[in-house]
Image (tube, rainbow, N blue to C red; front, side, top):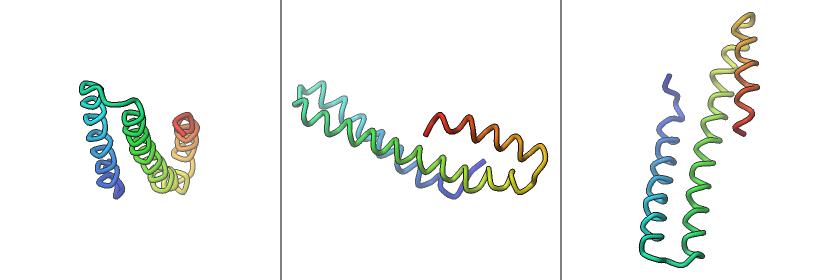
Length: 88
């Protein structure tokens, strides 16, 4: 299922991918640990931002829709939400 937020998430992940390639190149080039730590920090932030947006979008749309349906869909949504919280 494609969500409205997926293009923005893809953009963030591609940014993280670029930072990761850069970090690998920095290690291979023998760059300083400070420079590398800054690059790794940028990678972490980009991935955390993508994950946060994905989870928020899922809660706002998929889980809300399932809960509003009630019954088995609501129970499944609650179970899914509990499983999702381990990634927060």
